Image (cartoon, rainbow, N blue to C red; front, side, top):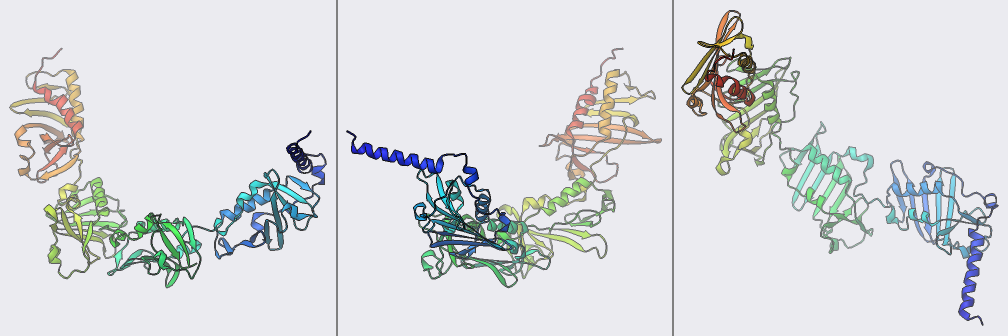
Length: 604
C-alpha cells in the first residue's frame, strides 16, 4: 500500500519534471520560436531611468549635462556608476527561455510587476517588467509590456538595481562638479574661531580673517580641497527638513564650512555631535539639500587646525635664480658684502673685495633662503621694532632683480635672540609688519662672511710646473728637486723611478686642489685647529712662464667629516682662511710625499 507521504513526493517530482519540460528543456525549435526581446539601444541614448517596485515605490534618475540626478523619491545627486552599470547590463541582457502562455500574468508575479523598469529616450521609451523568481530561484520572470509571453533572465541582473534611493545616492559631501574651479572663498568656523580664505586678483590664496591679511600656504589649501572632494558620508541619517536638529548638535553647529564664489555660496556644511556608538564620526548637514549625514571626523580636525597651520611659513617667496631675473645679493651682517650674477650665470663677490664666487655654494645659499621657515608668529601688529632688535637688524639679506629699478625681490631682517638659551631669534620680511620666530640653527646656516662663498677651486697648476718640494713633519725636513730631465732626487741622493712616478700622482692632486668647506678666517684661527701645533706642511716651488711662485699647505687636526683642517698659500692674497682639506688628496700626500722624509737607497 502506498503511503500518503509517498504520494506527495510523487506529485512534487511530476511538477518538477513538468516545469523543466516547459521552461528548461532545450528544444531544437526554441531559437526560432523565441520572439525578440526589447529593442536594442546604447547607454548614451537614455536620458532618464524610472524604476517602480510593486507598483508603489519609485526611484527616478535623470541625466543632466554634468551628471545623473535623482528626482524621486528625493532630489539628490546620483553616483554615475549606478545608472551606468545598469544600462550596460541591460544592453547585454539576453533571455534564457520563453513561455508563450501569458494570460495569467499574476502566476508569474506581474500583477502588479515586482519591478517595472522604464528607460526614457528623446524619441521614445523602453520598458521591462520583472516578476517572481522561477521555482528553482536561479532565474527571474521578465516580460515586455507590448509583447505577449513571458521570458526568463538570469537573477544576477537584480544586483544592479537600486532597491532604495540610497543605493544610487552620491555619498560625496560636496557635489560641485565644474564649479570647483570657480571657488575663490573658503570660510571655516570652529567654535569662536573664524577663518576666511580668499583668492586675490592674481588667484593667490590669502587669509583675510582674522586680520591682518596673511600669506596662505597654497599647497596646504590645495590638499584641503582635495580632501573635501573625497570626503564621503558613511550613512544618510535623515532628509526631513523639520527634524529636531538639537539631537544632532546641529541647532547651534559647532563648526561650519562655506565654499563660495564671490558673494555666492556654492556649498554650506554644518557639523554637529558624534553618534553615540561612533566616536570617530560626526553628524553633518548639507544646507544645499538640508539632509543630515554621518561622516568620518578626522578631516574635520584638519579644518579645525590653528590659523597658523594654514599660513605660509616661508620667509622668502619663490623666485627665479636665473641670470635673466636675479642680479644681486646684498648681505648686511658681521661683514657686509655683496654678490652679483653676470648675464652668463657666473657669480662674483664684489664687496668688500672682488673675488670669484663658488656657484654651487651660492645656489646652496639661495636654496637655504627659499626654504627658510618661521616657527611661529610673535606679533602681527608691532608699534616698536626695537623690542625685537629689528630697528637695527643683526643681519639682513636682500635679493634684487635685474633691470629697471633693480627692485627688491625679497629682504629678510634678523633681530635679537630669544627663547631658552637663545635658541630662537626674531625675523621680519620687508613686505610685512609681522614679527616671526625662527630657529637660531637656521639663522646660523646662512653665510655672514664673504669668504664663505668664495670659489673653492684653490690651486691650479700642472705637476710638470713643480720644480721643488719641501716636506715638513715635526722636526723632520726633506727637500727634493726635479732636474731638467724631469727626474726627482734629494739634494744628496737619487729617488727611485717608481717613487718618482708616484710623486707626479700626488702633485696632480695638489694642483687641482678644491676646498671641501670654508671654516674660519684670520691668522689667529690657525692655533684653534692645531695647524701650528702639528708642524706638518708641504711647500711647492712652481715655475710658470719664467716666473717662480711658492705654494704651501699646512695641516691641522681631522674634522668630524674625516677631512683635515688646513691653511694654504692664497693665490688671491686674501686674509688667511682655515678650510677643510679633501681626504683623498690628503691621503695621496700621506702615502706618497710624507714617506719621502725617510731616505732610501736607490735600487739601481
